[in-house]
Picture: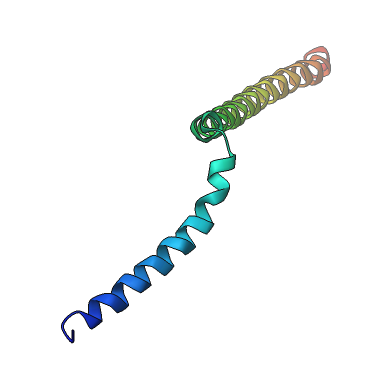
Length: 95
């Protein structure tokens, strides 16, 4: 009997842990299997779509900012050219 005593204690511990596990997982029995299978895939899909949308938006903003800065430089260069031509006219007349 002394050789069996430790195993009986282990057996009672496993029964307790099984009951605790059974209590912890009893809520899963109430949830339909389709929800358990579908919800993780939907979450992954939403995360991927959200990430792609955010990256696309960010890259679009960067492209627009680059285009706007090029346009500002071009407009500034044209303004400088027109002002220079306008200011050179009186000098040519006076010569």
